[in-house]
Image 1 (cartoon, rainbow, N blue to C red):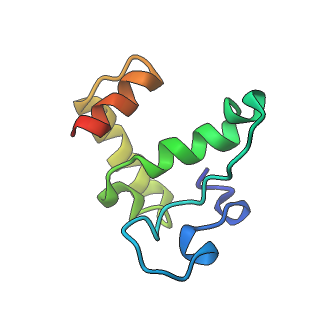
Image 2 (cartoon, rainbow, N blue to C red):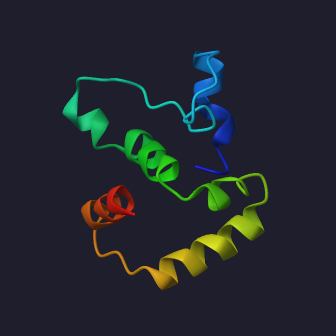
Length: 90
C-alpha cells in the first residue's frame, strides 16, 4: 500500500467537504465479491482502520514500519475480522 500510494485516491480528492475521513484512502464501491475480497479493497480498508498516528507516518516507510510492528506486537490479531472488530470497539 505504501509503495504504491500514488495508485490510490484520498477522500479529500473525491469530495471537497472537510470530514473526519478526509485523510483516508478512498474505498471504491463495487458489487463484485471477488474484487471486494481482493488486495486493493482489503488493503484500503486495513489502512483506513489504522490509528491516525500510524497513518500520519505513511510518507516515512521506516518509521511507519516501526510503529506498525509495535502496534501489532501490543495487539495480537489472529484474523482480519478480529482486527476490524477491535478497532470498532476501540
